[in-house]
Each structure stands twice: as structure tokens, then as C-alpha cells.
Length: 73
Image (spheres, rainbow, N blue to C red):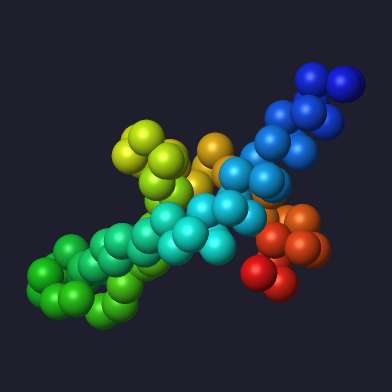
């Protein structure tokens, strides 16, 4: 349990820092109808860039975004 709490705390800190440093990036994926190939919308995919430049998928930091302090930031 202590490890889980530590991971959550670290994830919240990392996301808060990334938001403050503008290291959360949005990538837009088109939504296309198969029969006409028409673009009917976009899906936003978020990634967090680490200080080292590595891209972290949203699933890795999703739980941290439920923290009230991060959500307000």
C-alpha cells in the first residue's frame, strides 16, 4: 500500500510540475467515417513530456489528474 501511495504522490507532483512548465501536449487524431472517409471530429490525446524529453502517455498519469490541486492548475 505504501508503494501505491508513493507512486500516486509522485505522479501528482510530476503532473503539477508539467502543467506549470507547459510540458503537457495535445495531439489531435481525426475521427473518420469508414464509408466516406470524411473527417467527422477529432479526439484529443494528451502526452506529458518529461524533463529528459521522454513522452509519457496519458494512461501513465491519468490517476494524478483526479487530484483536486492538479485539476485546478
